[in-house]
Picture (tube, helix red, strand yellow):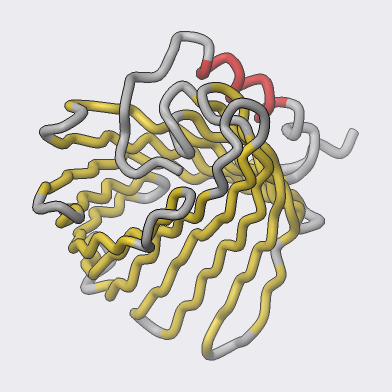
Length: 214
């Protein structure tokens, strides 16, 4: 798993993301593009891009680069289940693979729960290492936020990870987010285990594609 970023993305990752995304574009869907930029003293700077799509059947696909490990491409697919009126819940179990510096199979669960101005979001996954990397790992990222206005929200965050037989570690953080229509600009500050700090800045966009009924 990505304890924190290690190296920059290669020039081929954008093409891989684009091709996998356009394979799903014939359906009516909602989609998101996330660009997270990691800064810390140990590794410097790393870009972690991802694209996710959800079609009109609630089928979910996400492709990422540098997420599990540096120089590693991954893809997961699953189905979203919606529930609740006052307390809205979306659960998305998914499975997939990682290939590159880290090779493995992935089981994942995303959860989003909202109540009025409160939002809980969690992305967790367990990876089974294959080939020359036979180490299993766990990683999760959890946010709890409050929408303070139509443009601004803030909250607390937690990263948890376990690699091989190492103990589970937890990195607490805080964040603020600006929202402008389809665009969101989150900014995180984490206290990393071992006394280091990490800053994560995102430039994200959400949009919808309507099916063309000809």
